[in-house]
Amino acid sequence: MGGAGKKSIGAEAKRQMREQEQEARKEKSKKEKGEERQKGAVIVDDKQVITTLSSLKAITAHALARSIGVKVSVANSLLKRLEAQGMLRRFGGYSGHYVYQLVDKTAK
Figure 1: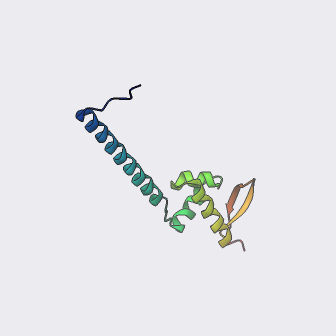
Figure 2 (figure 1 turned 90 degrees about the vertical axis):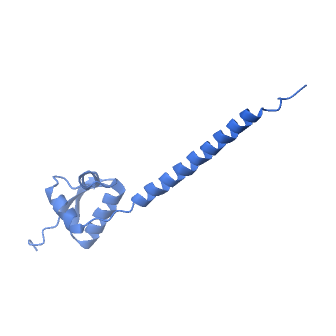
Figure 3 (figure 1 turned 180 degrees about the vertical axis):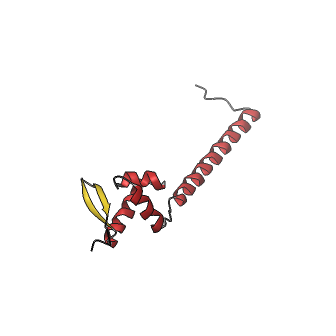
């Protein structure tokens, strides 16, 4: 009915070192995840976006995201903001996947 015997000093030291290394890895991964979240803030120049939009064949959130190198959610919010400003209008699409076109200011 005996249990596990007492660990040797060397085995106990190795166990402690492994625990410290695991804790260090956890802290490092937490820091890296925090840095990735900080990278999410994107500053986009509207003039650059307009020139990019004029070169696209179909203005969609996915096409814009691919061309300016941001996430689709950022591109979608950018398109909605430009639509609210009157620079774009919704042309087609369905279920949140819309196609936009640039508003021609000279035609008005």
